Image 1: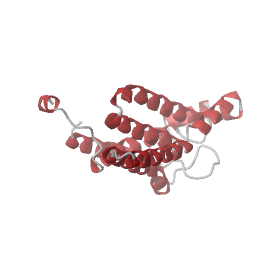
Image 2: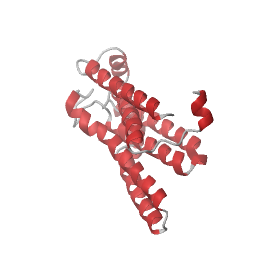
Image 3: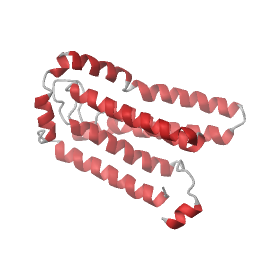
Length: 211
């Protein structure tokens, strides 16, 4: 993807995130209400136990662990004399932090209430932001340093994000749109940050000329 397309798509995704946040900042409606009624009190049963287990694994702990791994990896590469690769890993670490910060910065702005009594605001889902941020950073890292793993890592990232989103809705601590907003925010910030941090993969001349 070219720099221009990345910038345009990143801005559009962020605009969609903001628009959705403004739209849902009032009383929940539509699919949010439908799912809320359908899943009401399900979190107290077996489905809630399973969802709690998924949330414990796929949540805020992921970007923290990945950030530590990236920092250690950058240090090892630097000591080996692989300065370019170490720099790339450090820039991916910055990308991860920027993506993860979206929920910290946005929640006080939209001040959306949770489906049930729960600490902190609701939009966007911090758990989904955490998993999506880790996935984006991992895919970018593989794209630049381990291209053969991109497909597998992308699939794992997508499935993990979906599982996390489902678990938060089942637990009745997030509306569906909170999880959608999280993906929009991370995708937008991820694209814009990748441009700013020079993390976009080089475009082949043949592909660029035919686009």
